[in-house]
Image 1 (cartoon, rainbow, N blue to C red):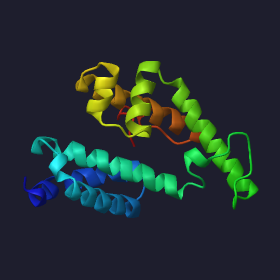
Image 2: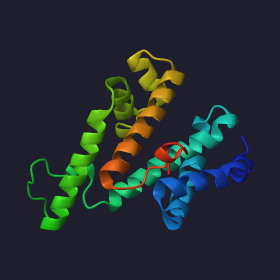
Image 3: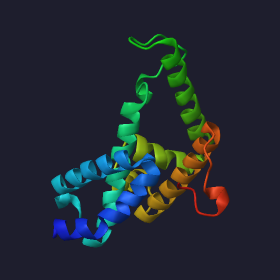
Length: 176
């Protein structure tokens, strides 16, 4: 596969997606660069050049979520369950972390079980689509469909809870 040709063909479209996902140009640029580096390192995992754009976008989304998580006051897994003190965190940070965790877990709990399971396995545990399909006895297409719908539901719920304007209600789909 000609990595450079594939990159030149698809990087602008993925950058535009990252603008929506990351929320600003600087993060979107950083995320795209990191995603391209990761894609280049793992190009041997890509079986079909036709899937490059979707593959690169998935890598970029994961990088963006990691960047967001790093920039958050506390990583999700380190957020206090019941307001327990976290070293180095002041009261405001503790409250914000607890609130973000509550909102995220609340949104996750509202997903229908079939979608929640796929979302947890793919986006939280970062398992491959093939692995999830095998584990849940689904086709890969079914996993992708459920994941897309779960992400849209999560985005809509999080946007609503955090007071962002959702484009879903404006007829442009669930993503910003």
